[in-house]
Every structure is written in structure tokens, then in C-alpha cells.
Image 1 (spheres, rainbow, N blue to C red):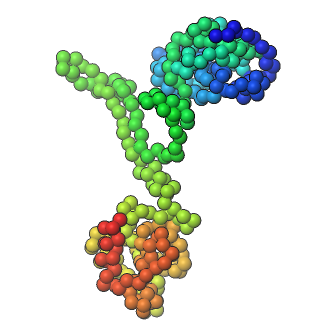
Image 2: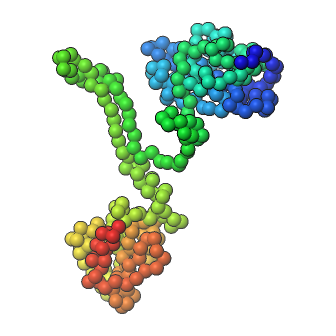
Length: 323
């Protein structure tokens, strides 16, 4: 360990400023984060100290110190401990709970605040220059950091939350008087948990992964409907009768079908079919009938085909099975 050294750092109040001024990596600095924590009904000033390139995970900190709530500390509150905002470190502070990230004790000769306006300290070391009330993992996980289980570098991947778990503990059961008798006949509050999967979140995931410039493109095995049925109105009303009959056949076969029987133009119906993204679009029109049956188009294909009216239900069933 090198001897501690005080240097002038005027107007260098952030880690970025300090790094530029000293020409050192952020990993060689100590970041001080001040918060007020409500612990057992009393507000307590807390200093969380981390490596300069890391961010504080307030959830971790809250659990470690058993805080009911956290908020950023005000400058006047920080100064009561002897710290100087922008130039703070744990050295020489009083009336404060000091929580140090578990990376800090393994690092040597860090740059940290001097608790004096316009000054920082070089070669600050845990154990020699300051100690903590608690040493624990309080940093946000980040790409490249060591995995706490295997030690290998963590990687960052894009993801979407589709479910959640809330560890409720005995908070609600104690207030509601919800107890059980253990094997010794002692009454104890039930430990509670909440587990959920959000349908809205699941739909967001599907929409993000399965879409194009026209709208959704539901995977067949997840789609709310097997087919989107359209009829193009003709003068005789034949296309409507055939479409309504086909709709009944599809439903009878267990194929949920969205039947668009609106008196709207073909373009409007086709655009809405693409927007909703049902896997198959079935179109009954004078043109399709004269060509031999029903026009069927997959949502993910630019081409359509004509399937005989008698084979249409079987075709949709087989599409579902193959999916």
C-alpha cells in the first residue's frame, strides 16, 4: 500500500471529472452514494461506497440494511456526518451507517474524496484508512463482472419481463392475523409469496419478436384465432352465404375464426387482417370462386393459393397440426 496523499481537485465533483483530471480508470476510484434509510421507524444516514465504474443497486442495499424505504440524502443531511458533497469518502465520518461493496476490500490505492471542498485523496485503502459497518454485494450486475456462482464474466442479453415473484414474507400475514401451528403447537405467521405471469407482457414479447411493417404476425400455436375470414361482397349475396357457411364449419371443427363481415372495402379488410396478424387469411370472393374455391394466404407469405371449398377446413386443420 502506498501512503495516502491529498491533492487539489477544484470543481471535480463527479467520477467522470476526477477520471479526466487524474488520467486514471474509473475502476481506480471510490464512489460515495448518500441515502436516507428508514430502519425500524427511524431515519438513518447511509453511505454506500462502490468502485467508481459501478452503480448502486438500491434493492440490494435496502434488503441488507433492512430498510423500509430509501431516498436520496439532502446536502444538509450529508454535511452533518462530516462529509462534503462532491468530495466525500468514509474517512473520518460520524453518525452514519457505512456500507461498502464487497469489491472495495480487494482493491488498493484508490482515489476518494477528502471530505474537504476542492480536494481528493490518493492511495486510499480499506482497513487502513477506513472501515465499514457492513461489507456486502450492493452493486448492480454489469457485463464483464464476475459471476458470484462460477466466477466467469457476466454477459448482458436483451430480455423482457414476462413474470414476477414477490417475497412478501410475513408482512401481510402478521397484519391480517393469518397464522398456523407448527409441529410444537406454536402459532406463527404464514410466510407468503406472490407469483405471476402477465398476459400483457407475453403479448408484448410476441409482438416484439413477430411483426413486420404491416403489423403483428402471430405464430400459429399462439394465435388467438386460427383464421381470419373475409368475404368480398357481390351483387347476388352468394359470397356472404358461402362465407357464413364456411365460418360455421370452421367453428364446428374447433377452429376459432375471426369473421370480418363488415360492409367495408377489400383493401380495408386486407389491411386489418395484416395488422391483427392472424396466421391464415381466408377470402371468399367472386374471383376466388370462379378460380375454384377459397383464396388462402399465410400472414408471413406474399403469395396466396386457391383451395377448394370442400378442402378448406381440412387445410386449416392440417396447418394447425403442423405448427
